[in-house]
Image (cartoon, rainbow, N blue to C red; front, side, top):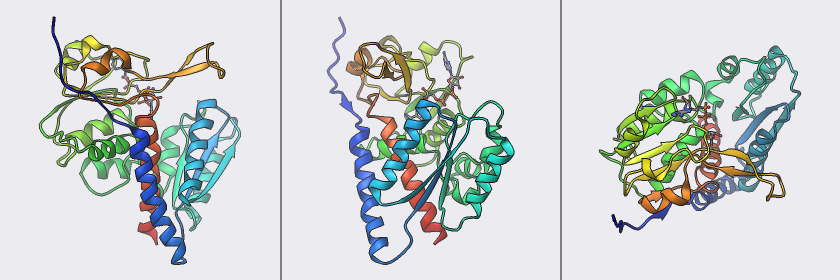
Amino acid sequence: MEVYLCAMQILDGQIVSQATKDKLKLKTGQLIAAGKKVPHLAAILVGNNGASETYVGSKVKTCEEIGFKSTLVRLPEDISEFKLLSAIQDLNDDPDVDGILVQLPLPKHISDEKVINTIDPSKDVDGFHPVSVGRMVQGLPTFIAATPHGIMLMLEHYKIDTRGMHAVVIGRSNIVGRPMSILLSGNGNPGNCTVTICHSHTKNLKEICLQADIIVAALGRPEFVTADMVKEGAIVIDVGITRVTDPTKKRGYSIKGDVDFRNVAPKCSYITPVPGGVGPMTIAALMKNTYRACMEKN
Ligand code: NAD
């Protein structure tokens, strides 16, 4: 029988995000005391998707906690693409607004691409605009998509030296997997990894994962990453958030990550829980981006 002795440490997104928010709150207090403008985040929510309501609600609440100004623009599910683009343009033109986010997913009749491309890159705090992505790829200062940015902040906080590690990123979406792979391969710390990016057409995923020093699971399949896919001592970052029907819960569902936490955790050196891992870091990173947008403009 194989016995593994390495102590596993939880990467606690609540603690790290709280530390990040506390710093921002302090800096915002200083802006207020000096009579300066505070950061202002505007969020657009189209329709009434339950998960999107929750995400936008916590972003607005976090703005309040820190002392940022926030505006929530609610638009109906059947709004035309033209009207949505006009609403974004109004926020682009409003000098008081520093950051703009449009909560995804959008209804099918609206093009994500057109929406993202309409946001002024200087207010693109979600980091999805091609200008932001291009600058990130070139390693230039820019807004980095909140989820990968939050993961990098967490690795930094725990002083994890990722240099030379083999990182396997599962998922190649524009908002998580692909930017994550670029950041981990970047020349910095955290970074300097050798990165393999996997997706739905990847063959031998288990064998590839078994070679990983770091696994970032961002595919949206509950408990997909099982213990037999993880090398002993690996670092596992679970991005997945899926609502799974659960009659034992009052709200009728529970939240599952992409990793079978109970069985994978004992093999890891570090692992993020779900909830309480990457999720809170995503919001903290968004707040950092909003603060930065305000500082750059004013
Ligand atoms: P997505 O659906 O856009 O992309 C999923 C990716 O996974 C695709 O690239 C696909 O090729 C890949 N994939 C699907 N099945 C696979 C398989 N069997 N093997 C290998 N790869 C496979 O999803 P997304 O927007 O990147 O989100 C991924 C997950 O992360 C979701 O659960 C989402 O809710 C969650 N998420 C969490 C946060 C957070 O703050 N924690 C933020 C964004 C997304």
